[in-house]
Amino acid sequence: MSYNIQCKNDFLTGSYLITKIPESEVDHYALNTIQTDCPDFILPFNYKRVDGQVEFVHKVGTLSKLHYFSGEFEPREYAELWQSLLKPLLDCGDWFMHPCSFVLCADYLYFDKNRKAISYVYIPSIGGCSGYDAFHEMTVAVSKMMTVSDAVLENKVLRSILRDFNPTEFIQMLKDHVSECDKAQPDESDEKQYPEPGQKQLLEPEVVEAQKPASGAEEIVIDLHPNIKLEQSKKEREPGGYRIFSSRSKKKMQPQNGVQKKAIEKEEPKMEPKEDFKKHAEIIDITQNMPVQPCGPGLRYVGRAHLPPSIQIKIAEGEIFTIGRFDVSVGKQQSSFEFDKKTKAVSRRHAVIERDIEGYKIIDLSSSAGTFVNEKKLPPNTPYGLETGCRVSFGNSGADYIWEVS
Image (cartoon, rainbow, N blue to C red; front, side, top):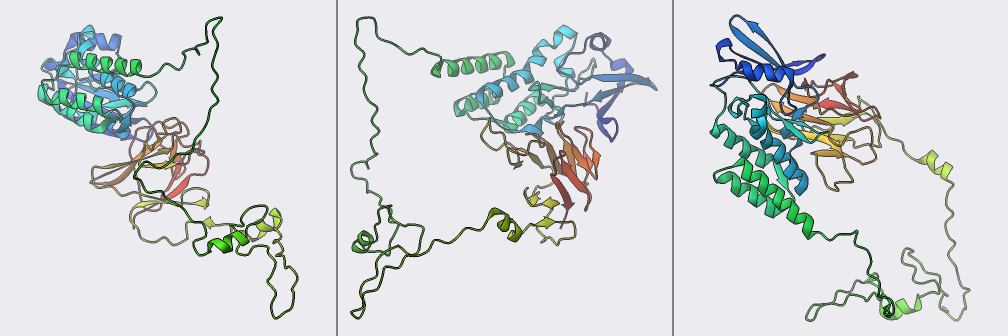
């Protein structure tokens, strides 16, 4: 049996999901257990009886949709995400829950970026709302969202999904692979081996040899002065070396017409004081009234030019565009657009812009400093419609932009 799930977004209370099922379909054992001790792998919910039906209200809270965090992961984190996805289906019996009552759809998987864990939407019904086909479609969709830097591990995952998928064997395969990778890595904590008493230790000096081209390979020579002959370059050599960055070298002029001219030395240009340079420097102040070339939907920076002047949003209907800050610990891009690592007020996973049939919407991904539209702070994980001319701020350090659709 399939149930209709409605998504409601409230600017004050946040985002939540509403589901109604007949009262005769309610699994009271699971319902009572969850209300007493709600597991952390499902969205918490309240319920009420209305005209012979039971209405469940699931609170999204600080959790974000899993596909907002799609990208490449390291092997250990990749394995932990898969375990977080599959273990609830194996352990749910402790709460009198049934796997078929989970909403097994990738669009309703939610991610806690602090715990690095996935949560489900659970409907406590006797008949259930999902089956093996839905489970297989969900795992295929998740495998497309989440990739891993280890090609061997990714191939193992894909083969397991395409064949008869067994969650228990799959989790064990992930653990074994990560354990093998840990053993293969050298242990940096190994102590340095010292000679036994009475033995001589041979100390060989470290010699760094220049790399020579392999046999048969052509040696590459870079000429810094392609227009200067060898004899001329020797003449212009000075005690301090070649004057590579000067158009004229200090040298004695050759006698012309029998007249010996004195050596002419070029005077070094005097550097202007730093304060004088600031007076002549051009300070660009971008305002809302400045014209912008029509280049499609995007965000135009408002303020002094120390942040990117624009953020182009090129996505089709149904696609997303993520915004964050470069993470030096990862060392590679994780979002569609990333601010410089020094922009501390912007979180590493800050916000996302998605496009649907109604237009463009922005969602704050539970960022530490928040996302603001027209100076109003957005509740986390709650879509908010963008209109032309509205002001969007990421954090509170001046990352202010104007939304434009050209």
